[in-house]
Length: 182
Image (tube, rainbow, N blue to C red; front, side, top):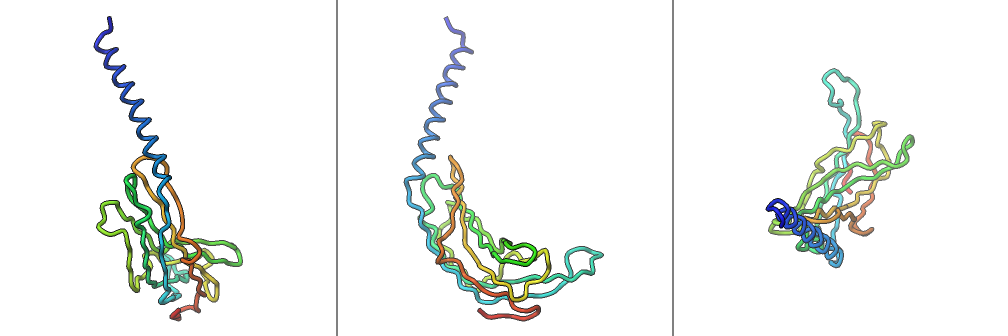
């Protein structure tokens, strides 16, 4: 009646259909878990220094801002049986004359599902990335730090979010070569 190849195709088609339906159910059940992580940021120090940009032959001096902060965060509620890892980052948002809205990521971390703790307690951490503005000047601009996250599931779409308005902290960039304890 049917050859072995036709039977193999039917079995493969059935398994593909069942796998697709199962993956869809897994992805949809991920939305039933409440996602409400908590966090707090404390800004310890903000410094603006002037130095040469990265080029070998460049003599142009630019201002770079360095931020030190404390972070206490609990991401336990973002993990469920479909979570592969979570990408967490802190960004600094500030305004300017030429460009009214600027945002720069200053710190990030990947927390895998296999990590022993889903809580972060960081004390007096220097930002991984300096803030460098295209205009090269920071003095007396207002800035805001904000914590955001991205859940990367095993199956399904990425879920993005931030940790509420209580986590955003505002500060003012000090003058060049000055340290400002906030």
